[in-house]
Image 1 (tube, rainbow, N blue to C red):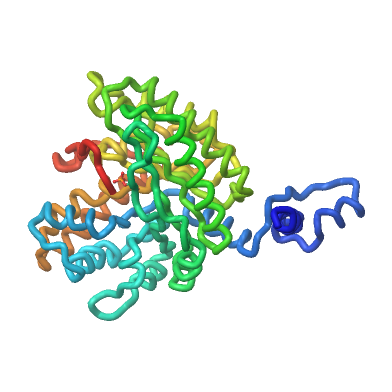
Image 2 (image 1 turned 120 degrees about the horizontal axis):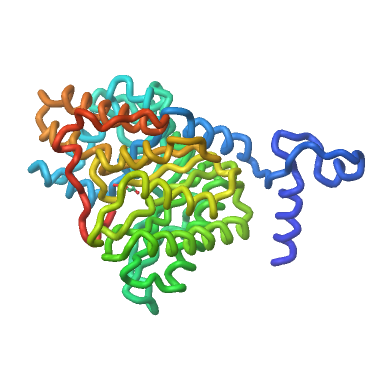
Length: 390
Ligand code: 13P
């Protein structure tokens, strides 16, 4: 059985991207090989194209894939009940912002939102397509305690993932997200890191098999008193394991996107680091661990203030990188929007404008051209929450 599936895998890997000849045919017929083989699956060309279009200059991802419970916390912060109608109203505000596609290339949705429409009956996925924004879907099933570890967690969701992914594709999703976490104050234990990396790799392979570009997100939580050097050490370990298992699972690197945390000191460390220092440590880590075949690095904001997240991204784009270096922020794109909206229909336009302000600032940061001059007080407020769950 194992041997049969291995033979099948070998047969699949011997195709060429966009090519008509098999690997063995090519070997027999020619001495000079110019094409570079990558593992070909039914969706390979499309995955590569999708990843490239998300990682396009001056654009990044709007993450609005909060579970219903987390969305409820967002709504509670402005005094709204966690009802389906309120979640829809909030997502409608975000997804129908005119001109959003200039700065946003992809939007990560929660399952409920993927199947929802505006109050006028237009599917949210169609609103996105009209703005040339690729719809994405959170596919993990959240974190639970990891027995045998040091109070750490692991991420559920592999059971039934292939059939769910196929359904999401039919509904219009073209990329996926799986967020697992690693905690520095809890260790991290070798077990937790291995489990996180293996889960991400299995999810990535299953997503690619079903036409979804996987966003690979091992979030190294900001919690802790440790210095930036310790974050660097842990991030290097985590990403080396992630890439080891991605390769073991024959994931096509050209058809994935990464969503790392920036390398910063722990949130409770005595000294803050400048954007230049964060950029230096983060890029050092990524250059040591991430092959240039990967098209895009789309950072999470992790509790940084809106302005901080933008400044750090800008600092990372002051010189050319081997990959597109951009954003996939949730909190750092939504904070001011929520505060501006307050659940009142008459504030929708102003709230959409504030989303455009943040999206444009991050677009400029992706191009390395952002200046924080004139940023509001609200945008400078940190959003770190100890033990944050998403
Ligand atoms: P934040 O930018 O709020 O850290 O979001 C993390 C995330 O995984 C969203 O998809």
